[in-house]
Image (cartoon, rainbow, N blue to C red; front, side, top):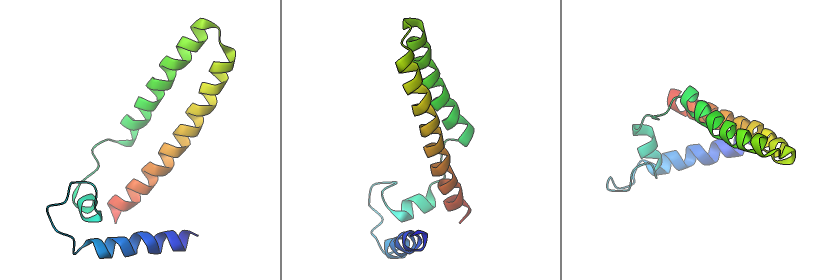
Length: 95
């Protein structure tokens, strides 16, 4: 499965090299190659933490334990998703 995903991504990168220059930014493999990602890993995860912390505090203030449990699980799930995406981004930048 990983091999198929790698072939798909690499084949699309090779095909993207002949695309016209006037395409919108960040929509093509060429634009991604030329653009350095602007937000650091720490900044992204801090923003996620801040967002969930505020929602958790509101649920805590209202005494909604079900919402607190839901937010706790959602936070951990989103943090994992972001870490995976950031690892992919870092690997692409090193390429």
